[in-house]
Length: 376
Image (cartoon, rainbow, N blue to C red; front, side, top):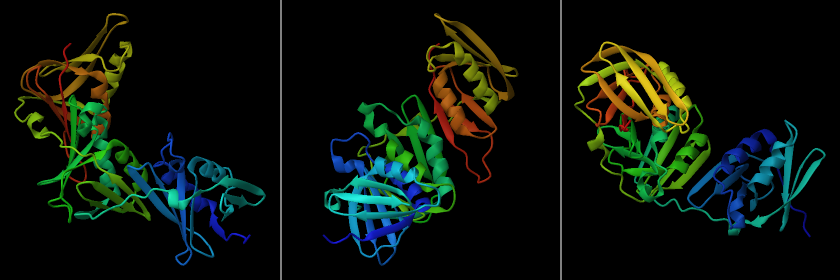
């Protein structure tokens, strides 16, 4: 039998690539090849492209290698990653694939790992994209990261199980679960005008965060059924949620007359403290906003006791308001909001509350949040 050609590459290049691509691999699957990653050699280009998929998302990246010929095969994602991880720092790794097994070696270490054919590995068809644009990866991270906490986990309203990205006067990222809403908007980048409104699934949002890193730019391409994000030699292709996002604009209050400015970090700590007596972090917390005074937080648990705390209202206008909020929802919002001070704009105790940072950040942007009241 002809001796297989050997692929030579560095552990430092291979390990992070396997860690990234492995995040798209389905851990619990009845289809064996879906637990594998596809390794495809382009000998002329001197690259090894690694691909993982769960049939809804496909994540791929390329690393430099030395090889005598083009070839493709699949290996178990977790086993391959663990084998490479346990090899010495700075090791040069050799992979030699035969029909049923691949030999992975570095120094005195040697693994023999079962191969599944590349022809069995499913690949996603990208199709044609109607729009494509570039964004700083930090901007993408802020847009998605700021609103992701409000994504619904309720399966019956599947169209809320992601982030709604759409362009109008601005490019907007919106998420809501019916109890809270978060929106982050930026100027429409070149190439995004007229794009279809798309709903990016929660898992895809997580994978985008893992893909983009913290420096440079990413290219976003999309149609009404798929999105592709490319940066630094890696690419994520994903299906979108097929559904209609509700008209969220009508739940954003515009005329609330009572406005209170509060230090975000101080409020988050106070909400966390009064939540201590609650058996569930989602229990109601009463917020008593006193015009010209303090914000008093109170929670009661018949089985454990009660707690109260106070936070200084740094600026207030309008009338005093007492309103109940879900403590966990409020804390999630405060952690996502960033900014030093937040402005709570309230109507009556049964109306939605609008919450925004007091000032825009250094880029001139600031998110918008809506929190529905809870009976206390």
